[in-house]
Length: 230
Image (cartoon, rainbow, N blue to C red; front, top):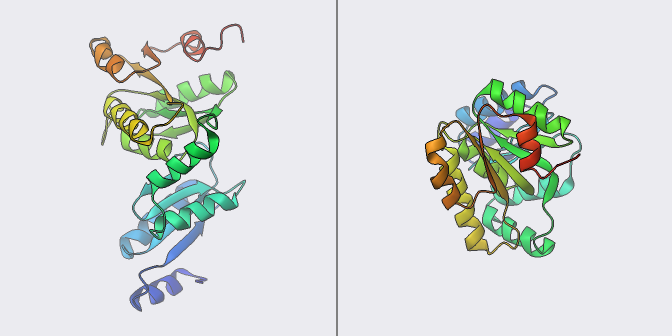
């Protein structure tokens, strides 16, 4: 157990490569900056970050970083984080176990994963979703979106097309390939949101649930989410 950054540094320099640091901050931005600085100084240290915000990507976001929510804190999340970071269990194994336990029906229909790199668009769409009665978790690129899906129970993903790191279409392909490999009984609904009308055929090839064009309206979103008359 380490009580301070200095303790972590000492144990790391002593060759304790299996350190897993549980890091919690009241401010989300400070927490993410602290974990990034810690992992830069000590690349071998693994971090479980307790994020006070509930609208950020959750799960294993990189080889040595797992993010979960600070409140409410669930014991199962911490156990999953430790199992994944210690190498005792892999993300695909957790996803398969969850699918088996749920029989394909354990997805969270009230929480939507929004993958959008433009901050203004992200805020507008998130507000639409909140008005429609959904909780929103956001990711800023396709890789973040895939990691969040891989470690979550989302029934629906709203995604932009062109984004840095990984675009929305490649993310959708990667998700569909993972679902096929795991033989999931209930594939996630993927709704594409893009200004690129010419890309519609490519989206349909990955079996998207709907294809919405920008600028997005709350009525179009309501229809896509099957919320008619709500």
